[in-house]
Image (cartoon, rainbow, N blue to C red):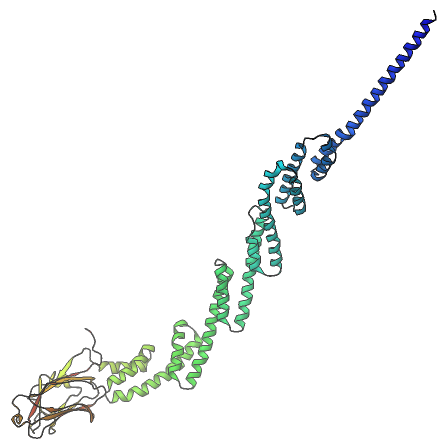
Length: 477
């Protein structure tokens, strides 16, 4: 009967022991669950929260300090870094610029060899965008400082992948327009100093950079017109001074190109009229006496240039018509008729009406011979030809006529041509055995030609073909 209570007590103790063990185990389990939550579940939740919020650096720090000690798999961290890079890259491209953030992301990524390929592909683009954004910022500073060409160079170097590329293009247009306005102001200042060539050089240099800039094209036209007006005013002042000094040639040199450039300019027309009156009066004063003396070629040479300049001037036109009307219309030659014409020959204005032309071989006698023609007079040993200044050229070939007296005695003769008592040609020691003597003489302005053959009584006469031309430069038919 006594053993039964003992067994019950032992059973009770064993039961309490079991309960204690169970409670301890439950406590340990709960503590383990708590520790797992604190060390694993909660950090993971915090990691996810930070990761979702884009706080990648904080999430990575949490992972490295806590999760990596529990979970040796680095894939979560690598994915976090990759997402970190993509997020920073997107922010950078969207112009939410934070270089330190981008550089930090790259530095973190370098810790993970698995991301080496991604980082290698990213860095060249980052370098290009860094330079592009630096160029944009420098361009803005230069633009504000008024250094427009340097600013354009900076904006032009931007990358097309830069989200501010379009803004940079807009800034280029702004800088270009500002530069053009700057050139307009600079060239305007140069024009105010009458430095038109420098102004034109500046605007043309700018146009080589921006050939389609309408502002520069318009300014070039302004400079050109201003320079033309300046040149006109300056030249007119010089021409007026030349006129006041009676220097008509200098005035003409200045006025001739101006008249072509400004045919309708009233001030220039008045100055030209003044010059025309002075110049034409001077021409008339020089040409009129020549016309009165029937020196038509000389008069024509004086009047012709004036007629080219002022064809509508009545005085010049009249003088021109008088002089030109007495000039030949072709290169006709005049030569003396045969030996029926001896002695002095007078060739005046009516020579064509009197004789037609003078032909053939002229025989010049050294002996007196009776001449009955009214238009001739006789002078021993000489032939005289009155030209009245109308002829310009004399050509001929002379020789002793075969059968002349005195050849057998060895006599010779000397032949001379005078123009208004000035010796033009001489051939001495002429005999029947001599070579023919040729001459080609300028007789412009000569009024009287004298042909003289001197041989005493040894030789009687010469034989020659002589042509007298009325044109200095024969016209082509």
